[in-house]
Length: 288
Ligand code: PAF
Image (cartoon, rainbow, N blue to C red):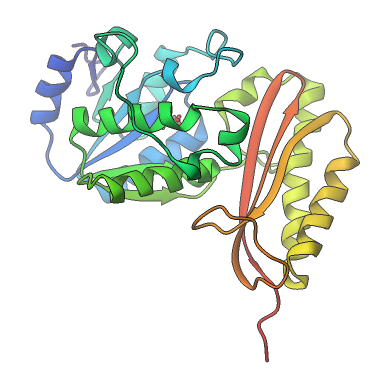
C-alpha cells in the first residue's frame, strides 16, 4: 500500500480491505478503467459532495473488450490518474491487476445483461455488458460502497447497472452524473486521446447531430431522427454505427406519436476510434 500525500493506493484485496475499513461512511465509489479526464473528475467531485469518503477504482477490465477491440492500446496513465484522483478528492484508489480481480482467470460464472444489453452498444459489442456488469458487481462487493457514481455519457451502461442493482438486490445507491464536454461540445472520453487533429474535427459531428435532433424535438420523433441523420450524412469521414431515438427506460425505439422523454444516442467510428454520445430529450408537443 502506497500513499502519495494523503491518498491511499491499494493494489491487493487485503490492502483494499484495510483501507476500506478505515473509511468513514457513507462511502462513494467511482469506477474507472484509468486514463482519467475531466469527466471522471466530475464524478469524483460529485462523490465527494454526496459521500463522507471517496473510493476510486482503476481497473482495465479485459472481460468487457471483444477480440478485435482496443484493450491492447487502451491508454495506461496510472501516475497521472492518481494525481487527478487526489486533486479532486479521492481518499482511496484501488488499482488492482487482472490477477487480483480474476484470481482464477476468466470467471466461469458471469452476470448476464439480458435483452437490454443486446441492443445499441451491445449489438455492436457482443458480450460487452456481461463483462461490464460482472466487474461492476465484483467491485461493489470488494469496495462495499454505499453510493456509486456513473456518467450519463454511457447511458446504456448506467441503465444496466441500475437494473442489475434492482434485479440482484445490490445494496448500493446509483447516482447519475451529467456528461462533461470539451468547450466545443465533444463529450469527454478516454478514447479521445486516440484522435488525430483531423479526427478531432470530424468527431464534432456527433455533438452537432445530437444538437440538431434536440432542436427538432418539439416536432416529434421522425423530425428528430431526420435532423440528426442529415447532419451525420454530411460528414462521410464519420462511419455511423447507429443513430437511435429510444425510450430511456427500456431502450425500445420510440414510435412516431410518442410524446415525452426519449434518448437520442449515436455511435460512430472516426479514424480508428469508436465514439459514442447521447442526449436526453422531451419529444413531441404536449396535446392541448
Ligand atoms: O465505464 C467504465 O469505465 C467501465 O465500463 C467500468 C464501469 C469502470 C467497468 O469496467
